[in-house]
Length: 583
Ligand code: ASP
Image 1 (cartoon, protein in one colour):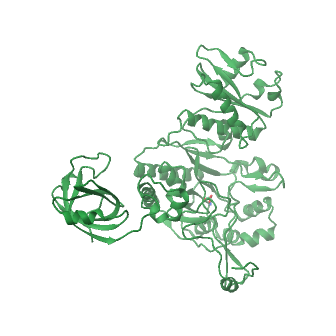
Image 2: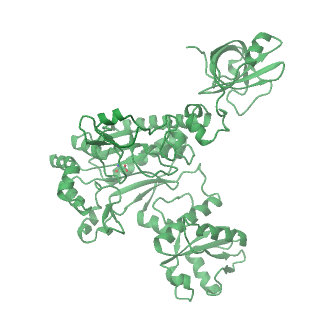
Image 3: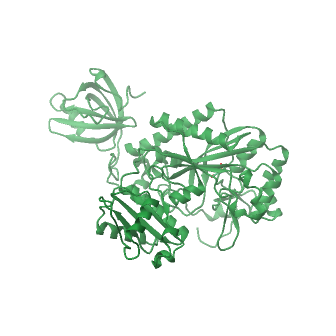
């Protein structure tokens, strides 16, 4: 070892000891007689001190050290005169007696400190330098901890970690596939897995019973801020279980992770049906850190002569606690907010529930105070509150109300990132219909079974069949989802036919799975968690990128290695791919 200690561990109990540290020069300050150097490694920062009076030549050399030089320093641990309580090592400094430059560094393109002056693009280009910064490095270290604790829990519960192939053929998770041309089978392509779904089901047929994998998945979707074309799942499957067993097992995993990684105790998870989530929160991943449930006022407010309400499919409202003092300006601003093209509402109606108990609305012309009292009781509004009302087409209005609820929750400080509300959302619809083509799509994926009590509706009323599926939602973020699977060949065939596959197509694409079901497939089900997202939630960040060592940017590019990139004509030829564009 070149070092005796790390830059994060020394404190007063080491005073007087001679130590050797290695690390990067984060910063140096030349105060005339004294030169201070902050030496950084993965574990922290330790202050080195060089004294002109006691060792002029060493101090002169130290003054030459540039940012990010890699050095090895030998010295004595001493108590600092001005301590820094914010640092683990803030009580001490090292009086350096000898040092060696292990490698020089050119000036980094941005400052490598907690707060940097580098913009996004620059930091992505020099990701290896950005990773030196404590907040980014700590995110990756958190991810490591999460992965290890996940393995520990699942191993303890008897799960077997099994790798599944990356070069496969299309899995129907609903996104586009990334494909890889096959040189040995020209004109044919592998697809990268959108998830190991079919393989994990086959492993159940094999009898592995409990499988897991922390696994890369690939989906060629349009990118959003919190999406990456390649991402990681904690993928799991179990045999001889019912939905309740899965819910308990993975509620256990999440509780374990919160306890071990964040020292947070999570109470038993709330359960909410998809139908209730949509009704009360306008959203299938409700943020349950706060109430502010959506109330439906439609029947209460229609046929009173107010055209906006009479023409609307739904009229919905939320009660915002303590906001009756909102000014005209604030209300105008909120109105503009709901009119933005993203929400597209035509306006916002409000009722101020004044502290003296009186009610004052923006539609007083049409509604008496007695009428407004009914609104107040429907929204559980009290004196001092503000009722906000939206009207319009059903799904658009509910969606807008869901956004408004989240916005008001944010403004009232009800969405603290250190509070965690975990819930299960259950009983999703099995199928959804494409408005244009009228075709049915599996809402989760085509291997999901129906709730046994709804199975009889599959032919007559497919839209009302509920799935034996579940999502885990934390603070309004969907962190995982899964289902009890179909394990019967005939039912699986029926499902494919409902989804518009001919028998031939189904056999061609998924024959391997349906055939396997003929050899004694056990009842089984599973779940997958979005690991990057789970890590970002634990890390208190909106962005999953910081939790991925080498992420892609918003256009799906890795700007550091400059990928994707063109390949040579020779390579293309070898793959049997003809192209007219010059490489
Ligand atoms: N394969 C599913 C997904 O990626 C999860 C599951 O059903 O287990 O969402």
